[in-house]
Amino acid sequence: MAWADLFAGVAFYLILEGLFPFISPKGWRRGLAAFAGLNDNQLRSFGLAFVLAGLVLLFVVR
Image (cartoon, rainbow, N blue to C red; front, side, top):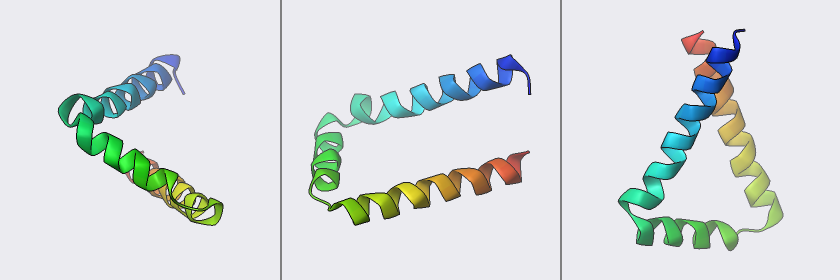
């Protein structure tokens, strides 16, 4: 793996993460508040789902 690929991935992540509060700050706050209201097991489930979705997407792309 080239370092350029790693930095490109991090840059793409930062772009996506910055788009949500830029486009809809109120919606972003509501979403964070909804996640804050979840218990630990629910948050772990969401985290696992995101990790698995990322791995599947990476496998498909690569």
